[in-house]
Picture (cartoon, rainbow, N blue to C red):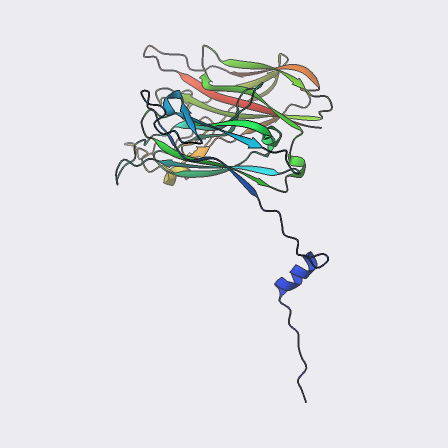
Length: 334
C-alpha cells in the first residue's frame, strides 16, 4: 500500500500567503536615505578655509563649518525621520589623533524666515569615534523644497574630524508628524552674563491645538572650571512676560561613556575627565532635547517667547566666563 502523502508547508510560506492578498506579496516600503555629508573634514585653517572643500560641501568659519544643500520633494505620507551622524577623529599617527579634546558641535537646518534649527546637538568624545541616531520627525514639515544644512565642530586644529550625516525617511510616524514647525532661537555662540536671554515673536497658525517647544541646551565655561559646566543654572521660559517653565539641565551618567573617550585625562584622585556630571551634556554624546508643552500659552495668534538663563558666571579678570549654547524650535499639531 502506498504511504499517504503528507504536505509540509513551512511557516514562512504560510505567513507569506496570509500577507499576499490576491496572490501578490506585500513588501514593506524601504526607507529612503538622503546623504547630506559624506566624509567631510572639519578643521581650523584661517589662511585656507577651503582646503577640504568637496563638490558637495563648502567651508565657512575658517573650516569649522561645512555647508551643503538638498532639494526635497513633497513628502509622501507621514514619514518617520532619523538623523544618522558619524564622527571620526583624524589620525596624526598610529598612536594619536590631531584633536583629542571634547568639542561642541551641531547639525543644523537653515531656512529663510526663521532661526536655524539644530537637528542634532552634540559634543565630540575626547579623541574617540562616535555614531548617533536621533529621531527628528518633528522637523519633517521643514524638510521640503530647497534646504541648506551645516555641520559644525568647535575645533581649533587642522585637520580635526571627519563627519557623515544622513537622513533616513521611513514609513510609520503617523500622528508623530506635526502640521508645522519653526526655528525659534539659535544662540549657538552662547548666552552670557552680559546677554543672558534671547527672545522671538511668533505667530501660531489658526487651528493649532497643540504646540511644543523643543529645546537643545548645554552649559559651558571657557576655562573648564566650575560654573557653568559643572555647576548648572536655572533655565527659564516665558510667554508674553509670564514664566511658564523652569528647569536645570543636567547629566549624571557621563561615566558610562568613558570607553568612547580614549584621550580623557585621569586625575590624581583617580577620577577621569570624561566622567564628571555636567550641565546637560556628556563628552561623546548628543544633547537630549527638552520638550515643553506650551499649548496653554501659545494659542493661535501672536506671542513673544523669551528664553533666559539665570546667574551665569560673569567674565573674570583673565577673561574666562560661563556661557550656554541654546537653540529651540516649535512644532504644532492641528
